[in-house]
Image 1: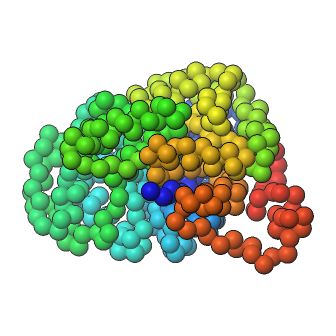
Image 2: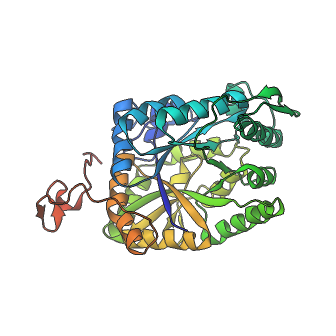
Length: 402
């Protein structure tokens, strides 16, 4: 079982601090409680194309594109970016409650033909009723998961290419089909930590995604989903969603984490924690419990830092350390059964280079990757052991500022 590395497209904005994304979009937190920050990068297609091209060049297999009020639409954005890349796949996040399952199946089939098979699907059931109601969805938490199970049953049914009937509580379909099914069928990534989510993952997911918790907690989740899947005669693979701060030395990496933490004033953290605390998502509550809103003891497991979750919803932990340290932690999760690593960092362009030029070769040397991309800088004259285009150990394309 090899490691599969994926990156992230910040379609809600990017920047040099943890609050940049919220500064650009509000992120559900009142603007009058956010300290203005500089260096925000709008998610225009030119900037996102830089990240996508970097991810492809550095050997990432796919990029996750989020969904929600504060993001650009994932379907439209990624099909545009497919025209700027050649091999990179797109893990498109979407909410099943706001689209017909037959239409979604048809969209996926068209997407596969346009991109020559570069679509992966990330099904996001939704853990915030306020966000769901913005899109006209008024179901409660558990009924949303029941609807997701029906949705995925219909999607897989109509992908058969034969007329498909379905009579459920949430969907009634007569003769649904995609005239030309997608080829290949997109893999379905799915996450959820609640009792309602587990059976849906076991029955329908190809890859179960968890946010970055300590290894012992991740193992419990894997054992839970694997057991449920075995009861249904299915085999589910596993992935994890993490941020990374990887540097040539652990000291440099932790200094970067400390700088990110220093940019957060108490008012911003309090506002974020108040907003995130209203989430119905069990996974979100688990993320919040890792730090309790406190800046103390944020290294909750070796090289696992919960500082991101002080202001960011969803994935709130980062792997922090030297390239070897980060590779060690990835190898540790991999030994538990984690195959897919969906990674990100602030800013996403620079951190892709830090990881791709530092950690990826280390993983390849350990035999955890099937292939490793050749460096585009091979043959470029070096200074002090570093490429001439990256003086002083800085990554390529690094921005100025704090």
